[in-house]
Amino acid sequence: MAKYRIAWLPGDGVGNDVMDAAKIVLDAVKLDAEYIHGDVGWEFWCSEGDPLPERTVELLKSCDCCLFGAITSKPKEEAEKELSPELKSKGYVYRSPIVRLRQLFNLHTNLRPCKAYPGNPLNYKDGIDLVVFRENTEGLYSGVEFYPLPEYLRDAMKSASKNMAKFDAVDDADIAVSCRIFTRQACRSIARQAFEYAKKHERKSVTVVEKPNVIRETSGLMVREAREVAKDYPDIPLWEANIDAMCMWLLKNPFDYDVLVSTNMFGDIISDLCAQLVGGLGFAASANIGDNFALFEPTHGSAPKYAGQHKVNPTAMLLTVKLMLDWLGEIETAKRLEDAIAKVIAGGKVKTYDLGGTNTTLEVAQEVAGKI
Ligand code: IPM
Ligand code: MG
Image (cartoon, rainbow, N blue to C red; front, side):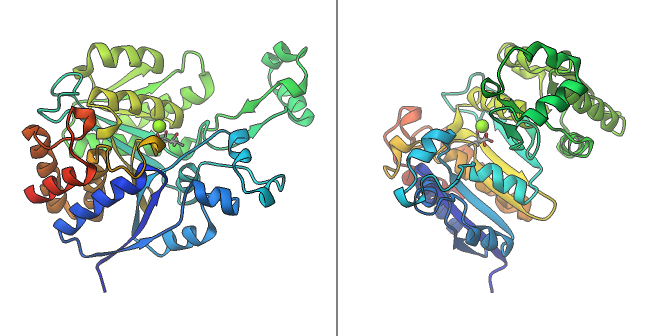
């Protein structure tokens, strides 16, 4: 029996292309694992009314971890239109499978390292090395949303907050509400993960990115919890920044920052920004980590226009495999893989179109495999 059982979920579009690349390097490092394919993605939404079928959830429960390609997400009405005719008007509602998986398996910590590898012509500035910790299950992505506004909810909100009076003249049918729900436990946990990482990797600071001057209660809770956690790490300063200003500061002075921590939506935003500083989504890896299970996915989407062409840069996926190896405790192997990726980037010869090259996804993966 293999040492690891890994759920293999290519998903949509170029998810399949980059998973082929992942397999090349996993074979090259001879990881003792079996890979079990799972159905997820748009075709299962269209044909079954569920992009994340129950059989896939069961598969994940039987595995050590999951490698995930990419997923197509569309807004509610567009999704409804593409349902197979016999499923239409049956009440199926599209929800992003990746967001659901994070919640179902309580993958509370989203780790997104953004490092400017030497020789990458797309680096915004050489030497950038940021790590984003994004709370992964709560906030505006909890799925507690209403449209139109139910009357009982308006009544409750009105009696609880005088600020609701502003909306008195607006019809229920013209109001949508998405709840930003934070728990103390999740805020504390993501702050703890960020500080633990900073300590382990000798990082110089942790910056909590929120907006407590306006979003007083939720952002306020996150910042207060970060301050509490920081007390246990007297050698690592905690800095506080507002999300809007942070987007500016990261462009102006990226070297002032190190580990960033935020909640679900601001973490989503800031991690795309950080990705662009180090070459774009083709270089952005991510790990969704829970207490006993983890799911690894590149930050990029399914890029339907490139699907099946083996054109996109596999580096984000290969760095994602590196994160998976780290999590499995295969630290040496992870290091060897990262070194090989760095060598191929520095070599500048074998590269995909985003880097001005003509090589395919698989050729880049083979080049990396050859350098391991
Ligand atoms: C990400 C993506 C997802 C998210 C989408 C595809 C639902 O943007 O992983 O950053 O919003 O979390
Ligand atoms: Mg995102």
